[in-house]
Length: 277
Image 1 (cartoon, rainbow, N blue to C red):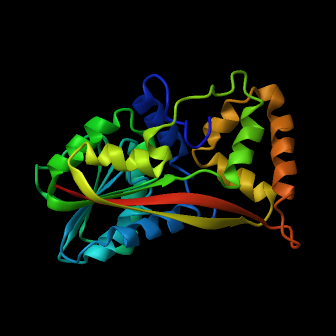
Image 2: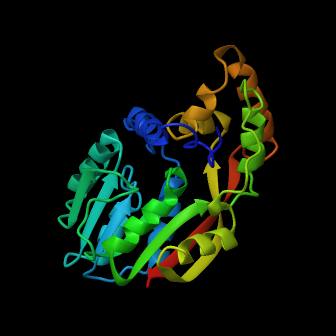
């Protein structure tokens, strides 16, 4: 599976829950600032107001939850929701270590956050919405949860970056490479805008940013990838072919290497901000 297709297929919620519970002990803990920079950029793009209430859907280990809590301040409140109990535990530990008293973290469905109608000023989701099996139901739930004029902000991958050839290099070793599918709703600005406007949102602002993530070397990439959603990509390759798949990935990574051996991967991210009607 690739980044964009990891959660497609039958029983996606259970698949995502199982994967991220398995990843939770070491998720985002290898020192590579990938998810953090995207989450921080999203929180800035969301324009959260001090004193407001924000819900972080699919909060993971807290990459967006913590900066969101700081943005709304002590008079505000931040709620983190994640389907994986292991991730909730990770986020809770981070919150306690930082002494943040305006944060609540709980297990829940990012597609249907359990909050009172009209009780939330903002909802953020960093690299989450493409996991949701029913985005239309999710948007209806978000519109109900938000106050009139409330903000929804989320990030998605924009494609056409250094990851695309890497995805293709590894997935060609899988028994059944992903078949071509119709363009998903999050894969173009027009589709995102149309989906939001059909579900009680307006004033849609979309910005694309290319971030660079740096790995000291190829082994550092492999260690990082094993503790992210990329683990499912490696596991989809038959065990007897993983060494060959890794060698092919290494060959591609070497083509991006700097003189000092470090590897920089450009990541195209699309940030979307919108408001309820």
